[in-house]
Amino acid sequence: MDPWHLALNLYWLWHLGRVLEIMIGWWRWGLFFVVAAFVSSAAQLFVSDDTGIGASGVVYAIFG
Image (cartoon, rainbow, N blue to C red; front, side, top):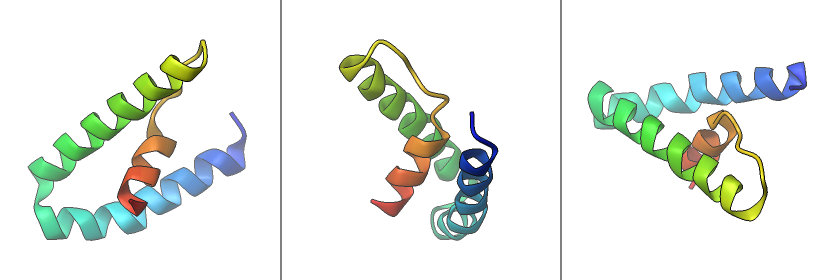
């Protein structure tokens, strides 16, 4: 994994995730994170033969 990719994922998770956690609460944020990571990894597995860690999918889900 490219260090810049990881750094940007962590940056957006920190900034946007903090706002979302304040809005919906810490346990709903945790549930959102797990579900978004699972769905994004499952979708990647469906279209390719590999799964991701899920942090990018969580960031895209937050943007959505």
